[in-house]
Image 1 (tube, helix red, strand yellow):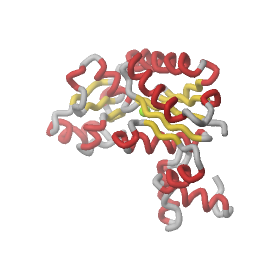
Image 2 (cartoon, helix red, strand yellow):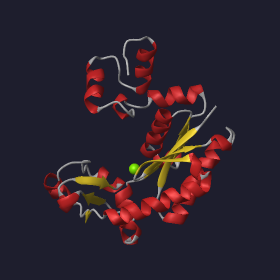
Image 3 (spheres, helix red, strand yellow):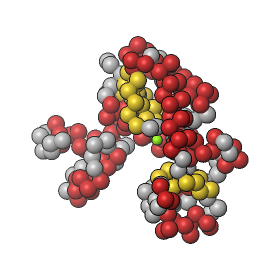
Image 4 (cartoon, protein in one colour):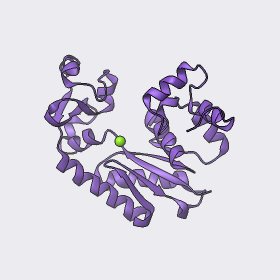
Length: 221
Ligand SMILES: [Mg+2]
């Protein structure tokens, strides 16, 4: 089985800001878009207080002040530099021909060289090395396809304590279970409105439901 991984930095812009202000570790942090209009990155602690992603700053301001959330204007030079360091680390780990940079804080890796036996170990080694060399925490999802690796990554992020930010889907059973645990709106390529429509149709709630419908030819994607 060919295996892919996606490595995704956790709350990337917030993590970059925290690197230089370690007293903000475990504290709520948000980063704002250009002109401080919207919230574009939240730490887990800020999420827990109900600060919404992509929401306008002025709406979230009362919540932010109440909980003493550290707020930063975006600094794209810094994020670009740290992104490069993360990607370089990945290139060194798996070979540059096996890294496909997907966004500033995400890359797909081709893990064929690792075989199937050590995938979990490989995932942990990638996560630990990136953190050690760059200070940035990442989550790693491993699966036979890119879409499934995104599902794995989503589960890793959702249950950080239990998974230690690494999830490997390398059997049919694990894949089926993961899809059942994934709301359809979280599937890569399923937009918010389409997800809403699927849920309203009262038949598709999870990624697993979607795969069943696709197999039966009810829904085209
Ligand atoms: Mg990210």
